[in-house]
Image (cartoon, rainbow, N blue to C red):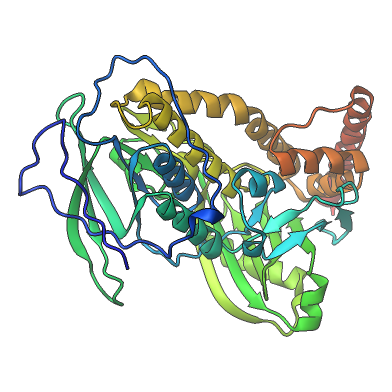
Length: 466
């Protein structure tokens, strides 16, 4: 265990003995430097904000998931004195755990933390019509399946190896600066790793804060970021017999229908030695266990004989918060609301937003030598919105069109059988860009979509009569 004492806060105001504590940080398991590909950001910039003397810019990252881990690593590599505070080091968020291929490369993820490489998916309609998806994948392409406790710990360890101080603690409030360049004072409980420990009350002063503390973000509440609509995700990890696990070796399943969710989908995603079975809903949260039971029933033949080894539930944001930035505090990941409609994907966008926010701070501070302000952090939001707004908008439209009724879901599954639809979908998912289409194929797709929706509407009317 390594202990790191933070330097006194020099250059803004003198710290009084009453509100400054020597904070002891428990570092995660170290990673050798030869495992890390460093990408130092060297910046040349002209700024009016003051230079910092006697130390480097100090930034706190609250939350140690993909967003916090990626942000902390980028800050540390960029010359920022970085403190990452995470309340639960073995946290296993209820999450399907799917990551796109581009994330493996962009974040230099080792293959041994990826449990499964999914190359086939089954989309299963309300009437149990199954469509096989994945025919358009190239030999090297796949969807990675990870366990969050493994991925999150790896990213935190890498941040620590890059120089970040990792604190096992629970953040509970923040005192805002008394003047323009004064520090933020963060209050948290530091844990010593002993079971049942209530923790020790600590404070720390920082120049800027990145809120990566999830859907129930206390950082967001501290800056009056506003609320957002959210879904409840419910997931069971089920250990199934080895012969049944073979079926899911490189296969994932998605179920749609009012029985599994009125506005989302159910899933069976393979992990290292078990499957994750789950569902979610925004509109009918009290019925989430009923939808989970229905998801298990839809998959019952393939998970027969399985034993539930873990039950998880968590809120998932449905859209960005009204405010994601205030002065020198920025939100990233679920705290900012970066989960896509339709698919419910958030891991890649969490890590990407954490890195982009940190890069804006490194650039604005000239590698930690100057103070930052809201204008520096706003560059992150502008870049984020420009890059990913089209993806969020397309998926929002798809959810509104195809998740509204069982007939519409039948039409959606029917469309998924089309190879052009599969290619466009996988290209957009794997590489996180809205894939450019072929005009002729786009026209044919539009005609087929209209046809599917017309048939779905006719089916809905017939069902209403019955």
